[in-house]
Image (cartoon, rainbow, N blue to C red; front, top):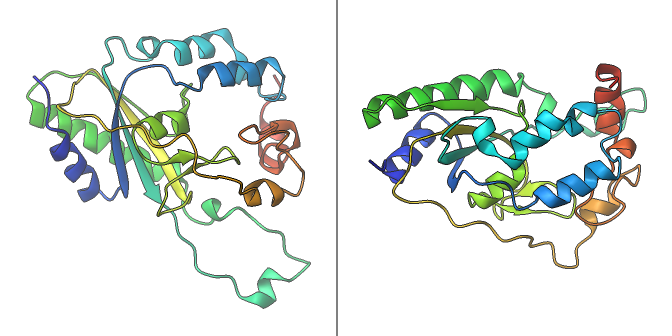
Length: 230
């Protein structure tokens, strides 16, 4: 039995998500680009991104969840207050990405996704299987979210919603439940001739539009290298 997509989306909004989309459980259309990125070594020392078992998960979603039929993609906004100029311009202070100003997003999204999955199980009356990820699995999240109609891929590799921008977290539920309707993919890109997102990068980490060389990225240099050695 196919579950009503509208009911699922309404419940997701009730739980506090700002965006929700549905897409069929198929490999990302960006998979080949990802494999080329790994082949070029742009993942740096993050060896887990190139592990054969991780690549297999991206190539075949059934390895993640046998019998998977659908991906429920969600977005949760993060917003920040403007910073006072005397603080923003203080050379003695460092700058931290806005997404990290609040609580750990894993701790916020994961329980909400589990509640949504349990609601699906109860409302469907079926013994469904599911798996929840919040930036924690071998999943090309932004690409799947784009396929679920949640935005387009910017030249800076971010998922951008035409009205909400890119300031939202992404999470997903893998499930073997089918729905009565799925969303149309968002446009591949809407950047046009704009290069502001690329020009703003202080380390020139974008060798080409839509390609990020992690080895030159501040986030990688300050977070990933101290954590991952192979």
